[in-house]
Amino acid sequence: MTRRRTDLDIVAYNRERWNRQVALGNPWTRPVDAATIAAAREGRFSVLLTEQITVPRDWFPADLRGCRLLCLACGGGQQGPTFAAAGAAVTVFDLSPAQLQQDRLVATREGLELRTVEGDMRDLSAFADGSFDLVFHPVSNLFCPEVRPVWREVARVLRPGGELLAGFRNPDYYIWERSASGGFELRYRLPFDPRREDPAAMQAMFGDDSPWEFSHSLTDLIGGQLAAGLRLVDLYEDTQPDPPGDYLPAYLATRAAKPV
Image (cartoon, rainbow, N blue to C red):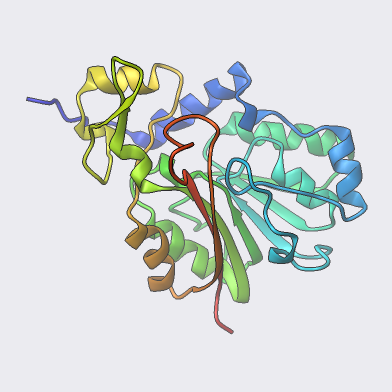
């Protein structure tokens, strides 16, 4: 019988693993360079919600100056400082203090103003209703077991007319497991929850240093935004360069708005 890990504090577990990823130099924890900040100061910036495709420029206001922008579960010294250099009033909210330190590092280095707040993306009680004009949420809700609370909190902290830009993993990605022959075979039922799987298999999949991931259905990922009162405006799919993500869209990105 598979031993379930229902006693695991996933917030504490993944916080520590992301701290480790900073120490290991994970690409998503590396601060942007001075050239990126200089370009953003001139209004030229490109950022990622998913792995490869740059977010369309028309998904953002024509001028970010004064835009109250929440980088949600978005630490690492990348998007937050870039938006701040472009003139936005940026708050970076993340589970990992080491990730938030990367944002403060760039802010200090480049003379930028931004605010950092540590917490669980499912609980944005640190912010009042209608606090933000834009929420930027790259692929990160796969690190928490439930996603609908995230959308409800985002809808609450957005002002009427504000927008959510979100990236997330295609849930079908989690069906597959690499086989002994090097290919892929059907292995997991959805939704994928590592706490209910064989501990030895999860150890092989994630190791000691990586955070655990959870799949979420499209009903929860997209339908959950609609149920929270947001209106879907646009979306696109993205891939990743390694299997199985080179056989199917590994990611989706959505643009949604809070009705006025």
